[in-house]
Length: 72
Image 1 (cartoon, rainbow, N blue to C red):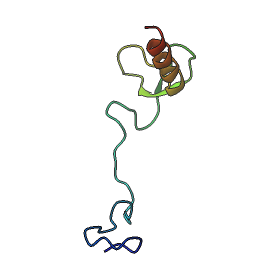
Image 2 (image 1 turned 90 degrees about the vertical axis):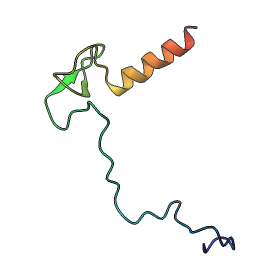
Image 3 (image 1 turned 45 degrees about the vertical axis):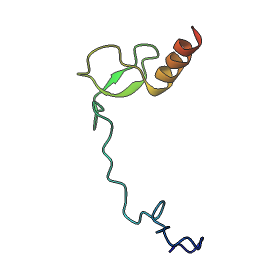
């Protein structure tokens, strides 16, 4: 039973993670340098230089998504 509620089914484990997160970075992201340059602003991206296609930094990717969403 949780301390905050009297609900007998509430085990209080929703946010009570005592262990550090062990999530891996997204697939295709580089673990270390060398990073590919963004094709728009030439800042380093989170992708390795060996990544194929147009690599965008997170800022440019967000801006491109906004442009695509509003161009309809």
